[in-house]
Length: 74
Image 1 (cartoon, rainbow, N blue to C red):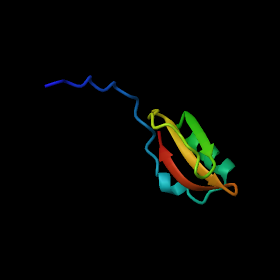
Image 2: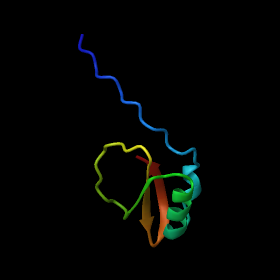
Image 3: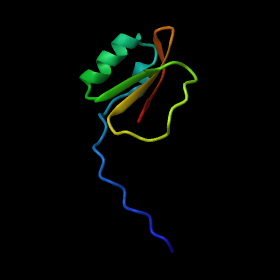
């Protein structure tokens, strides 16, 4: 049986309530995320195609009309 390579020891993400970002204005959400320890924050328009690689410390916002509609890690 083939063995998978061990997973690297990734740094842990900030302990944060991601749902709390939904409904915030984009600048407020970005400021809040950085103040809570997220090292990489990106805002994306709806339906943007993104790669599936996971990056520890990154927080993604789907922003429509200047307001965060969805938020996820990685």
